[in-house]
Length: 281
Image 1 (cartoon, rainbow, N blue to C red):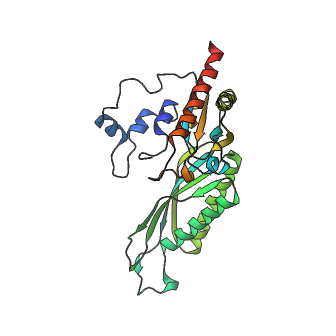
Image 2 (image 1 turned 135 degrees about the horizontal axis):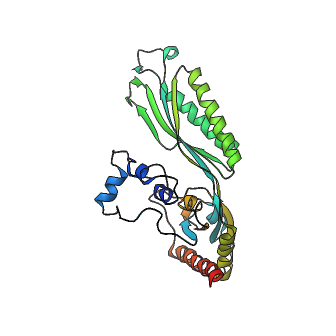
């Protein structure tokens, strides 16, 4: 997302974030969310959350490879895994690469590399959980300077909250040990927590029936990625529908879903909404 934390607007809608908090979020260039809304004419007069939903069905590509690999047409989404995001800064000492003996270096990049490997191991240990580093900044980023500071992001996720707690605990214990071993300083802070979400059983059943009605094969699955449905589920019955994406690739220019797959998802969405609406007819 351009403005962190993710799902900012649905978070405001559900009362997780205040509008004032959202307006002051800045992108990497220092532009504020509120100013950008005003610039494009999207800073409207109605209070956030003033329009209520009877229910929410969110149609989305899977953003992963499971439906394609399993040759299923529709993902019946049961919930969204929890997530913990951290920002980490490792501080060492800038020095000349040619003149500083290996034994006397305080190499922040070496420390970050070991930490990133340890984070990856945490994900492997707690499958189907995942642990990732997606943002990395090396400073001063010069070929003949031992790095003095490294900044990176940490993304921990798991569909079960208790397991995610264990992953977070291991992360919090492991990084200081690596920093101490290499005589480095460590600064880290949690910038976002999203608890694991279980979607509404009645809406899930509507999606399942909607796919069966259309003759589509299905796979029940949690969502690996975060979505607006995570926050909306706090205030109204919510679920999701997935369609495949080529190679499971997303957040990439190669992202691709066929018109037929989009049509299948739209048909299931229509069937599910009509099914749910019959409860109130």
